[in-house]
Image (cartoon, rainbow, N blue to C red; front, side, top):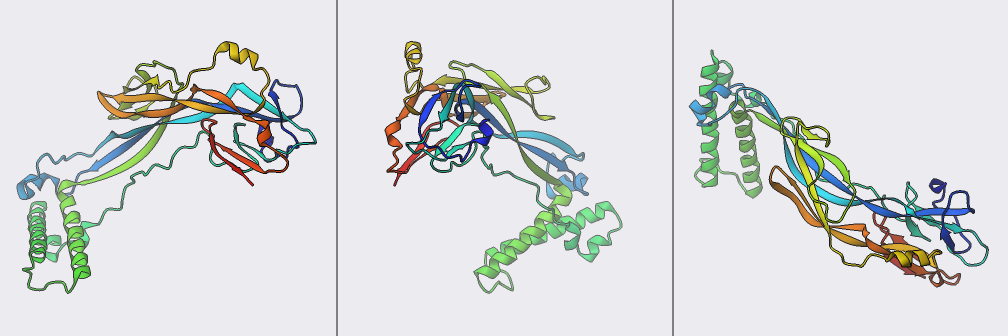
Length: 344
C-alpha cells in the first residue's frame, strides 16, 4: 500500500497510528537506523616485466618479483546511517475535505521524505566514492631503438634498454638545469618535453619492474546499532581473497564498536503509553553514536554517526499546515530528521 502513496493529494491532516485493515489513507513510516559499513578495498595485480631478471644488475632495483601476484588491501572504511522502516512508527494520514496538506512524498520503502514538496535521495543511498581503476599501459616497444629491437639475446636487450633509460634521465636533468644544447622555447614546451620523457622512462622501466594494476571495489555490510556494542564482527578481510562475509573464517575480522553519545534522553515508557494518537506530523530527532572500526590492529574509522534509536520522536503541530499558507517540509530520509521548512 505504501508504495503507491507518493504524490497523492490530501485534504486534511488527520494522522493516526496505523494498523493493517483499519481505515483508508496514506501510510508512512518513520525510519530507524542501521549502520552501513562500506569497505573500500583495492585488488592489486602485479605482472612481471619481460626483463625482470636483469632489474638488479642494470638498474639496481632490488626485490623485483619474477612471478605474477594478486593480493588485496583495505584502502579505507566508512560508516554511515541508512534508514529502514520502523514498524513501531507506522502512521496513516486519513483524507478529509477541509484543511490542506498535499504531496506526501515517500521513499521506495515507504519512509516519509517530504510534505508539499519532493524529497531527495533514498534512505539507503550510498555515496559516490572516488574509486581507482586500472589505466592503459604504454607499450615500451614504441620507444625502443632499432639497436634494442635487433639485440641477439634477452641479456643484450636488457643492457641496451638500461642504457637508454639512463640517457632519458640525463636528458631530463640537462633540460631542467638549463644545460641542454636545445632548450624548449617556453614553459608550455618545457612541460610537454618533460612529460614525454617521463612517459618514455616509465614505459621502458616497466620492462624491468613490471606493471601494477589497482582496482577499487566497495563492499557493504550492515550492523544493527546497540549502545555499548564491542567488537561486533561486521565482515572479514583476507590479503588473498579480499573482503569476505562474517561466516568465512578465511579472513581476519573487521570489528565495529559503538557507544551512544546520549545527546537526548530517551522517551519514558509511560509517556509513550499516554501518547496514543499523534497531534501532528511526527519526525525524529536522532541521537549520535561514537563508532570505531578496526582490522588487524589498525583503526580504519573513528567518528560520530547519527542513530535514530538513540534520539527521540517529536511532533510538528497541525496548525503549521494551514489552507492559507503553503508549508513545505523536507525530511532526512535516512534518519527522519527535519532538513528544511519553507512557507509561502
